[in-house]
Length: 170
Image (cartoon, rainbow, N blue to C red; front, side, top):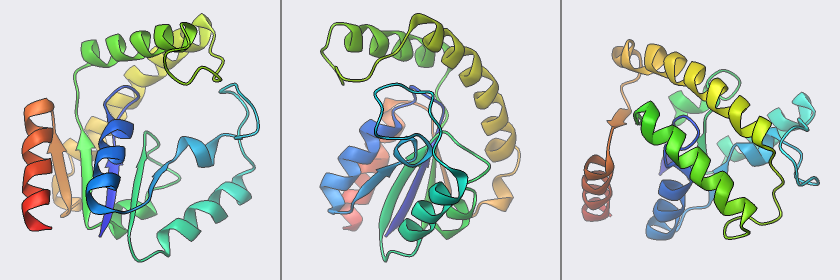
């Protein structure tokens, strides 16, 4: 099975991918780990584009995968290859709260204590996220017919129902 989870930062992509990975016994990949250099603890060192694309294409060659991320241009090939393209369409207020709470948890060393984020980076992320959310809505909500494999989940109830249905199909 090939699952692609797309959504803005704070939409729950990572949480969902971890749950699906455990449930289906399929490796999950966070696109941030491909896009950004992993040898640093900050969020602003991009990986070389050729290396990034090679890493991504190796994942796409696998028999089954779960990919999650907020990028909509360079990894678009995966949208078509996925058995299910899951778009997490979460409202901006919820997204912003989650981003801020995640920042606080990191500062308090409750979550990913090695990742160093500045307040400016969080503010920049919120601004970027607002624009990215608009682009995603335009791409996926306005072009549903282009993505026959598209599943839109907008709240926790939708996500829970999706997970239960997938578990029943297993």
